Image (tube, rainbow, N blue to C red):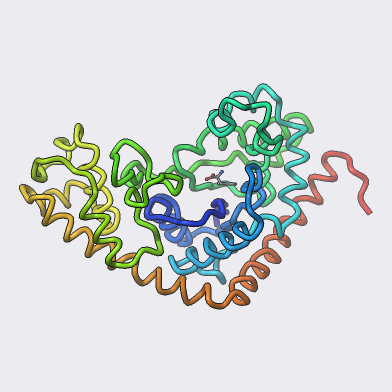
Length: 332
Ligand code: TRP
């Protein structure tokens, strides 16, 4: 069975973009794969985090993943810091990756901004840790969004370079499983910007914890244009806000834009938005309820993470032992 690994940042305010773009895919990939899903708290501290908020977000993301359908018996769900092997292999990869490779990473440039001197070393080495996350399990398939593609290419370079340097065929070349453009959820206020937890306006996103009333209101207020819906997806090319709402509808109903438009051809947005709000509530409300129920029992959440970490450790241990042997570390 192919081994799948993916990571998600422990951030509060999970929204519909996280769900449709990543989480839902993770749930689907459980069929026919051995899956490890990791809440990447080590990655999170590459920028400043409030300790209490970090713990709370880690538990919140865990609850959301379970509520969305991650089966904690079939899949391994855990937080990164509980499995020391990630940090350990990341160090070894720090010694494999070249400065020149990391200098090309566009995410670092974006996140570090103008004050690069003041960025943490961890933020710079972030992609090496990401490579370690995957390769400490020798996972081959990695579902990620478009924005992580460059990091995965780096993981391939690291694997290849390690294999070459030590004359082994040890690490596999990872394959990105890129989630399609249909699940790129954009802001409800601006059809050209990604839906994001850091957008100042809460009206730009549908949070996984929004009430049905809040969902309906946000969709009602979502930016659109004055024209009715067209019958054909090609006509949405210059209408980003309309395209976004249609894509969300399609994703939520497991359908596609063409099918949605043939059902709503000529409809005004008022009617379409009403139906979209109903659909979004149908999908989100049960998850919100389940999340709340799970979060009320912190002991249960922590036990899930502890159990996942234990199972992850037993997969990583023999691989790390082999890495030590290959590198020439003397072992007890
Ligand atoms: N960097 C990823 C993100 O921000 C999260 C991540 C960390 C990840 N380690 C990973 C994703 C390993 C896939 C595989 O979305």
